[in-house]
Image (cartoon, rainbow, N blue to C red; front, side, top):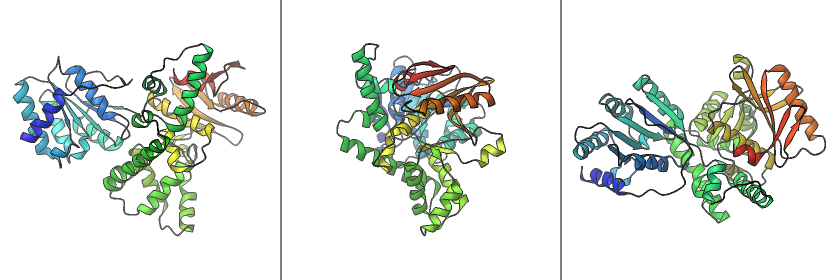
Length: 410
């Protein structure tokens, strides 16, 4: 127990400094399991440490990083000894346990269930949306909740750059320059704080490799890694567009990569579960929606640099809007008929917010985008119609024009 006690006390004494995250997870009034989910390197561990630091002077609380080399490989016995250390420090009091990277422990949910039944609240973090959510739902039976933490929002990005936006011409010029950096490099904290573009790129490449092998290949026992890597390359290069599994299967077979539709469909689910990509389904009746190809996005616009040399700025803007919608708790759909397409439809109550994203409204673009929104609003009850652009602001024919920077700042 010596090593475990050493780890625990190291974190009891640790000072935590950095950008305050916007995710606001309340401490439950009754014992619960609280899962913090999201991509690797998005800041989950730091968020857990911030939460722990804010509590430890007023509530019995301990933090345990289960990927610490001094504990490797962690087991259920590691968690049981952690609870023993808690009682050694705090006596029989109830408190809050923080278990970072809990998925490193096989059958961790059994310990969490017991700790909650003993009166403790347990925070867990991990990079698998389905595994953690499923285990918490089945084992805790209504006594577990989950929250998602994505890379920096544009607001957090500006705080990291020590910039306070404003309405003056100079402030607007600066905020747009910073937005261009945010759109092109994304919001992963270590990338945001790095100055070298070479190191930014190499860092993003290392993230993709880490997530691919730790959270997909190892977790799901993927054997056909050639097909998996090619699938990721294809989705990464065509993000923001409809992605056909059938067409991709035929393409791979034409290249001599043996696979089938069911395998690629499962692999795409694994990539989404590991927070590498996010699917947006077509808004349609359930059967049609499931059959229609989804639009697939990367969970951070900066990841596009791993897959493409030349970046399409309009699609990066669209990707940034999608991730911000996910941050805000929305689950958007896309709308498409033979005559028009709208990027995002977000249901709110009995009606929808329609959102179209375009870099420029020059030439015929404005007419085309307005027509798509108006056509969609004839099919759907729409309480708000928004056209997000790079630099235009106002209202035309009932459609709000909002610059991307202003929309991202909320």
